[in-house]
Amino acid sequence: MKVGFVVIAIVLSVFAGRLLQLQGVDPHSYAQMAAAEGSKDIVLPATRGEILDRKGQPLAQTVDGRMIIANPAVTAKVAPQLATLLAQRLGVDYIDTLDRLRRKDSQFQYVARQVPASKAEKLVADVRQLFKDDKDRPFSGLTSERDPLRIYPDADVAANLLGFLGTPKNDGTAQALAGLEASFNKYLSGKDGEARYELGAGNQIPLGDNTVTPAVDGKDLQLTIDSELQYYVQRVLQQTVVKAGGESGTAIVQDSRTGELLALADFPTYDAADPYRFDKSLYKSATLTDPYEPGSVEKVLTISSLVDAGKAFKEQKFRVPGKLKRQDRPIGDYWDHGTIRLTLAGIIAKSSNIGTVLAADQFGRGQLRRYLTAFGLGERTNVGLEGETRGILPQGAAWTSQVGDRIAFGQSLSVNALQMIAAVNTIANGGVRVDPSLVKGEATTDKGVQVGTGVAKTRRVISADAARETMLMMERVVDPDAGVAPGAAVPGYRVAGKTGTAQRVVDGRYDGSTTVSFAGFAPADNPRFTIYVVVHDPRAGSGGGSTAGPAFSQLMSYTLRRYGVPPTGAKPNQTPVEW
Image 1 (cartoon, helix red, strand yellow):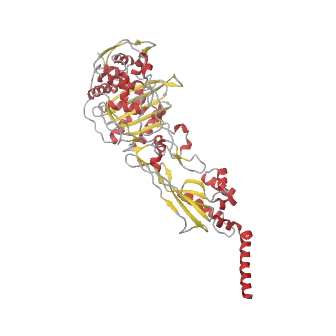
Image 2 (cartoon, rainbow, N blue to C red):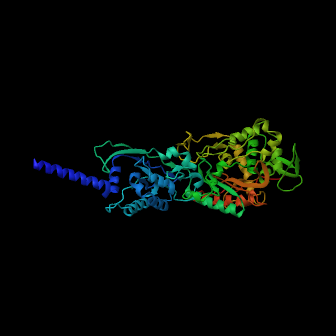
Image 3 (cartoon, rainbow, N blue to C red):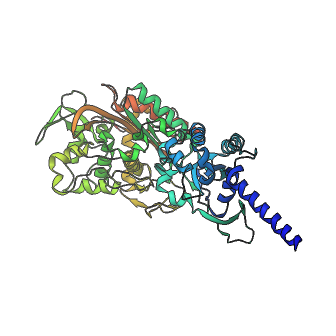
């Protein structure tokens, strides 16, 4: 009997001691243990697919990263000090983080996402030592889990196309905010998985209610872009725009036969690896989003359509006056002249607005508009980037005779630069328009549109004979004696091209500034590449031949050498430009 009382007394004293320890001696450590009971839900992040150039070089890739996770039941006591440290080390918002560290309705709060692995591991290790409990045990309120990190190894190269993953929320959760990252977000991102663990004393219970739904990784997106060529094109474009005192510019390199885009550059642009240093207005491809009037480059569409329709030929003779009086205003050329005698080839070589309008008078009603529609003007290219403008190609009653005159030489309509190069490339490709492609193979945008080389379509716009005859006329543009753009010539190669200078529409009116450009292809007699260079608002006196032409020559020369394209050995044609 006495033994029984002794045992009971011992048990009661143990419970009393334990209660004293819980209530007074070590409440913080036991709060941590209590918080460790229950269940824990963990996101299992899918690995985002890479964006690759045509040779498989990564333009956007995923590397090892971590998410930082807090257990508020443990972190609440040291929340102010810990929030300060996290704000300093991770750049997270102090107030939001403080709130997360003090939450009473959760044992699991994201503090930051996609932190570089080494940085996250050092932070957690430092916190474990800095906030030890009274028993000198490491702090258990902050942990890390796998969370892949997106990087852009080439900085600004193709940033206008790639876009980026940003962190607009204070918890650091990454979101696709621009470019291909946004338009192919579902394709690239895959689907996160989830793991739920039942916990006991802070540890996973092996036979507890544990469920795992595996992540499904995203797919890689391979582009037609040649990243080394893209780098070179961006630098040449920047030099060209800056030298001309321009506001902005575009340069595109396209495979004449396949329609694949080897380079598509905008200036100014931004660094996809550090986008927040740049104005958000740059988070786009102006090549696609910004419409403009193409000017005289459009003349080759007008003239090739006339030739295809059987209404004109390269040696056709025209008397071109110094001014042409039409319905609402006189039409002039960029240079002063009296009545001159030009062939159709001379109208292209000299870039005569008056001659183009006289030639276009031979079209039947609605005929030019139908040709321009077939060339792709007025319709989106749908290469896979959001925000593309379709431009403006007047329809119906909006196409008056005055508007038709101006459209013939590239005013009173608007395009995006990709539409324009695809149209000029139709001539290079023997009269067959091939859809421009930015994606190799096939891929589906978030809007459900299939794009890529695997689904690109072709259509004949003009005959092969009309395309060749137009090429011969375009070749005279770079002739030093006959044309206006000798600076666009590429030594050793036959080049066909066309200059462009157009008035700019700003806030709904012509403001006196211009857009200058040069589009062309080489070798002219066996085209491999089509290149288009555009500079917006260069200093007064700049022209397509003098400003964009030399940049075209530099880019074409580099591209031909890079891809090992030899000269054809043929001499340039000598179609007469005057009579």
